Image (cartoon, rainbow, N blue to C red; front, side, top):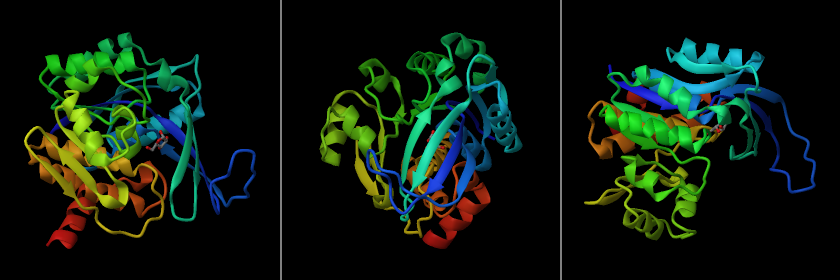
Length: 303
Ligand code: RIB
């Protein structure tokens, strides 16, 4: 079993479906209100565990009912939470999510305890990196913590995958040290200084020194670009119910495949398959596929 460390957020997702996303100043009457366990970090941790990895998570929750509920959920999926601190001075992260009739989402995150993760927390979690194959991170945690974890992972010989979500400018030193960068289109654009054309933006990031780039393109699949080659791998067509956490499913499946030594191209296909399964189901963590589901899906679609 491969070992993956996930540094990242745990949020409670507060979700409402509406006929459309509200405009500024507008009130829209929505449907039923639902809560789901979420947070990019926890979603990816749960997905990686369901796909067969040993997963250790590093993060913070608040000392409240949401925090306790989120910890219980990730533990139920086998995620080791030894290094998820409970912070009595902060509220647990919350995501306010609206979904339109096509399943497209709009999200505002109140990060709470997630943004109080410190470099010291990461250093104290060094034991999590013992024998780890890979470190997976996103950007719902402080950048200093992300950078500290990257250094520990590389010192211990683990590969580093960064899903730079939500989008924010990043120092070149970080971009060039990450082994695999997995942005979506808007994150790619921001990191490529506003370049809107996908291949040109990807080329600009590679010119900045990014080692391996995997751009998730939603219904268009994913673009894989390394120093030696570039390939666009199509998405698997599915009926879309809820797009929340599709990128998290992709990142986790990509990492599990990579940690298991599968070729890069196959790891991207795994990502596409996990993302496709996730959008057919409601909720963030509830939509993450198991390994059995993913293998069955790939067999059906690829023969
Ligand atoms: O990527 C989806 C996640 O983003 C949601 O679960 C929400 O919590 C936000 O972090």
